[in-house]
Image 1 (cartoon, rainbow, N blue to C red):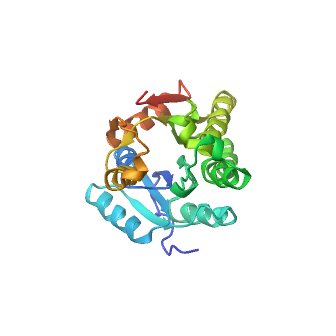
Image 2: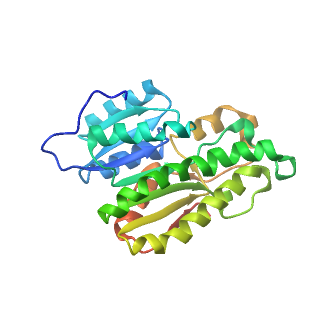
Length: 247
């Protein structure tokens, strides 16, 4: 286990874990929940970036810890979750993002089985594997939430996004099916389905610097603070499984 910090003794802070933390919606969501007294565990591959996020949030009075990990290694998920629990306590809310590999994006008629496996791993299997490990504890405690971030192709077929639309649609179907079943157990499952380019995100940086990455698109921009507010409302209001942004 990488972290040396132990559970904050005497604190009864609730814990938010963001899996796939980036500079856009990730930081904004951490700050939004942090204002409500949540401690935040941020997980991504880049240790240096995570440390900068911790410092940024500390300046805003938000307790946060960095948990560097390659979430594509699903065998390592138990260690990641154990570290978060040891440092901050049980995870009440998890934000689960799919993991997109730009090199794996193909038009739908160019998708083969190898490519489909790559997109399913990043867009479906990995976030769902984390969710399935988190759910038993949430159900046992009778409270908690799983918040998923999906792209527009999860809801609207977009041929140029190929297998990622297939993966996203599968994950969206799971969330819609699980929402009502989990509500009866005190656990929320919901999602933001986003058909816009998130400001300050890695995707916006790529869009601004790599003409090939735009694929002829001119997307609407969305403020990540707005997305964070929507996540907060979804979790606290719990009356719907999905909100859409940008379409």
